[in-house]
Amino acid sequence: MKGPALVLREVRKVYGTGEREVVALDDVDLTVDDDEMLVLIGPSGSGKTTLLTVAGGLLRPTSGSVVVGGNEISSLGDKALARFRRDEIGFVFQSVNLVPFLTARENLLVVRQLGGGRIDRDAKSRADNLLGELSLADRADNVPSQLSGGEKQRVAIGRALMNEPALVLVDEPTSALDSKLGHQVMELLHQEVKRRGVAAIVVTHDERVAEFGDRVVEIIDGALEVAQER
Amino acid sequence: MSIAFKELLREPRRFAPVGGALTLLVVLLVVLGGFLDGLELSLTGAYRAHDGLVLVFDADADRQLQRSSVSDDLAGILDGLDATNGVGSLDQVFTVAGGDGRGLEDIALYGYGLSTAVLPEPPPPGSAVVDAQLQRLTDIEVGDSLEIGPTAEPVTVAAIVDDLSQGAPSVWLATDEWRRVVSLGIPPALPPPGTQHALVARPAAGDAVGLAAELSAIDGLDAVTVDEAIEALDVVQQQSSTFEGIIGVTFVIVLLVVALFFALLTLERIHLYAVLKALGARTGELLWGVAIQAIGVSAIALILGCGLSLLFVVLLPPELPLRLVPSRVVQIGSGTMITALLGSLFTIRRLLRVDPAEVIG
Image (cartoon, rainbow over all chains, first blue to last red; front, side, top):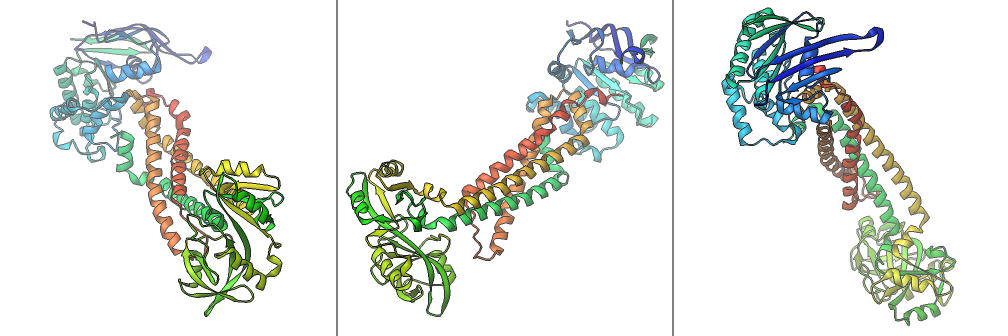
C-alpha cells in the first residue's frame, strides 16, 4: 500500500513579502483516503484554489509536506512535477478547457500523448470505454464546439480519469451549468470516482455539491475546518 | 499525429496569413534566385563550355580574355607537357550577326581550337557553331546562312549547342576562320600575329586544379580553372553580391514574419498552453509543436510558392535572363524551412513563462 491518496502536513503558502504578504494556506493538515471524495467549500479568497493547486503540483508550498500517492512532491523540479501531474493527477477545470480542435476521444487521449507517450490499442480502448460510461460514445468524434455544456464537462471528467490517477482535483464543476445539469454531472463524477476507487477533492461554492462528498471541509482564511463528515 | 499537426490540418484558416505571406516571399526568393542564376549563366556561358579544362591567360591580363595575349610559342610548350592532353586557342570579340531577313543581334564571336563536352570539333572554314540563345532570338537552324560582323561575312550554321551566352549570344568559329572574319570586319580587335587571347588546356590526368597550378608556375602565364575565371569577372561578382544581399534580406523578412506570427499566436494560446502544462506537457513539447507548425506552414508555402513562381516565369518575356536551377530552388527551400524553424523558436521565452496554475481559479 502506498498510503492515503493525499497527505498535507503543515502546508503553508504565502504570496508576497513584508506588508504585502498574504497567507493563502496557514499550516494546513489534511489527509484524503484512497477512495474518498472530499468536498472543499469556502468563500472567495479563502484559499481553496491555492490548496487545489498545491495538491496538484501546480504550485510549490512555501513550507510543509505534500505527499500524493506516497510520493513527496513539494521539492520536485519542474520536469518531475510535469511528469507527476501527467501520471498521478486528474484535473477537471472550472471552465472545462478542452482542446478546441481535438475530438472528444482525442481530448481523452491527449494526456497519453504528453511526455512523449504513445497512443496504443489499450489507450484507445480505455478512451472508448470511458466515453461509453459517460454516455458519450456517439459524440466521440465531435469537437468541443459541437458539444453541449454538460457533454463538455463529461469529456473533461473522462480526461481526468484517462491516466488512472491517484487523485482527481475538480474545480467548481457546476459553476457553468444549471442546477439540473450540475446535479447530473456531479452524480456522474461521483459514480465514476467511486467505481474506480479514486480519491477526489471537489472545490465549490455550490453547497448542493456537498451532498456528494464523503467529507465536507470548509476553508476560511487559509485554515481548514471540518464542516461535515459522513 | 501530434496535437500541433492536427491543429494545422483542422484549422488551416488560422495559419492562412503567415502561409500567404510566406508563399509570396518564396515567390520573391525563387524569382530573385532565378535572376541571379540567369544573369550569371548568361555572362559565363563561354567559360562554362570549358568545364573541366584549364584556361591560360597572360599573367598581366587580370584573367580578362580580351586583355590577354598568349604567344604561339607558349602554346607549343604547353602542348608538349606530359600534364596536358591537348591545347587550343580561345579568342573573343563582340560584334553583330544577322542576314537572311533577320535583324542584327549583338553576339560574342569566339575562335576556338579544342573541342569540349559542349563544343564540337571546330567547324571547317565558312561554317559556324551557334548557341541556343541566338537560335531563340533569330529562329536560325542548322544549314542556314549567318552574316557576321560589319562586313557581313557569310557563314553556314554547322551545329547548334546549348546556350553559351557570355554577355551576348555566342557564335563559334575555328581559330583561323575567326582571324579571317575579324581581320576583315574589326581589324583592331585582332590579337597581334603569333598570339591569341588565351589558351585552353586539357589535363592529361583529369585534374584541372593540379594542371592550373603547374601551368601558373611558367613565367608569364596565369592558368586557372573555369570557376576561378568566372570569379574574376567583375560584373559577375557585382551582380552576385547584389542579388545575394537582396536574398539575404528576404530571408531576414521570412524570419521576422514567422517569429511575429507565432509570437502573436502564442499570446493567443497562453490559456491552452497553460492547460496542457497543467495536464503534464513540458515546455519542450509545446515548443516542438510550434516548430512543427512553422515547418508545416513553410513546407506548404514552398510548394505553393514554387508553383506560382513557375507560372510567373512562364509569363515573363523570354529575353529576360531568368533561369530556375534545381539546386538553387533546393537551397531556397531548405533556407526557408530553417529560417521558419528559427523564427518559431522566438516563442521559447513566452512558453517558459506559461504558468499552469493560471488554469485553476
